[in-house]
Length: 490
Ligand code: BES
Ligand code: ZN
Image 1 (cartoon, rainbow, N blue to C red):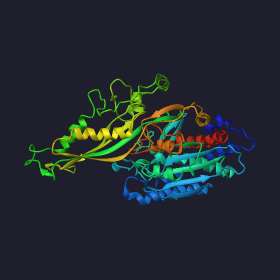
Image 2 (cartoon, rainbow, N blue to C red):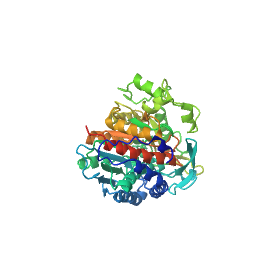
Image 3 (spheres, helix red, strand yellow):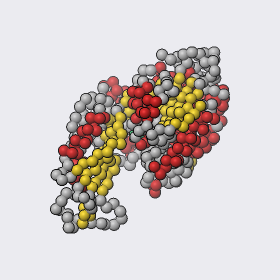
Image 4 (cartoon, rainbow, N blue to C red):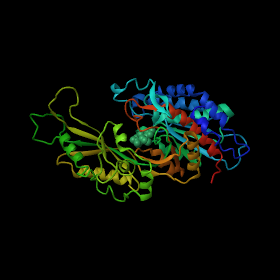
């Protein structure tokens, strides 16, 4: 054993039938190298869900994950959807388990973001590389670098590897488990809601463990209890009917890029507050209790920004960086294009210009209203003779999950046993549409336990997962399962 050995003995052997945890932890320790190799195999499949060129790879990736689960005694299917397939797998747990023992759902996603810009990777995005990483408790560490390393294949593998260790040690899992792996999380989760509606019975569970978030730092585990929502649109401003010579026509008619940039420039005022009508209606100031709890986390703003190569905080006036990140709504351009963007110069007035725009939402903001307000804003500011076209790329509300459930307490206990430190309750600026949809469609709350770090380069070149986080993630998942199995359902 490494560090974990010093915190052993917290397994919940509360029933005579309980399966021992200690040998499971020993199995994890012995099989680390193989667990890394299996993760590397998963990472070699370029399951980029947004790009149709990778559709066959994305399906192959779902099949790979289903095959892993079948090896561990799951009944696993790759279910066709209107988009990418869903992996759905079920394990009954030990035979003769007591009535009232829980059923736990696990959610993760096997799809990844595109790897662009490819030239900024130090090794190819889908050829996982093991290189030096952060130290942990004074011991040097390695990291695995690849697209999807932490978001979310590495995190999915923390629970699959925990199941593997339970299966290898006891031939079963300590309680019933259902696994659902999505293939469209990074591209709008279009199929998710219809899938939930048509698989309600198979998905029945007491709680859903979602591993797609981060830790507080490499030593401090975390449970995320607040996620921001999202509205994502693409707005095109159409002007002349064709691209024109900028000498002949320049100054005589509207330039769609100039006009679009002017509208985008009006989205924020001088205090960086979003100018969409009704945007802040019902957005409440951070409750004092949460402000106090976050203050206790000792967030280092300059270190956080420094990891992104930035020296100056920037954002809505009168708020702190932490507030802006976890509890304030935003409106950001994600891409803007039009006209000539190739090498050299081409003198042209473009026929149209497009912006990809997203708003991160907080509690009480209605995504549909924000969507309508974006459309109204662009239409109201559209110059005469031009036309606005808006395409939606998905939306979902902000979510918070209960902080006082038996499942959260069970997870917190397992995290403390693994890391020797209390789990921090944190928010995140990111969104996981599945969490809100499962709450609404299945009535199931999520428990967001993740093992990423802020400097993991999520969605950026050189995405990585520290092998310490992977290893401790597997241990924490194995311990959590023991805790859950010993928790009677409400
Ligand atoms: N794993 C992320 C969410 C996340 C990011 C959690 C950072 C914690 C820290 C997830 O895969 C993601 O990127 N979600 C998208 C959702 C969108 C495409 C609907 C996001 O937040 O942009
Ligand atoms: Zn993710």
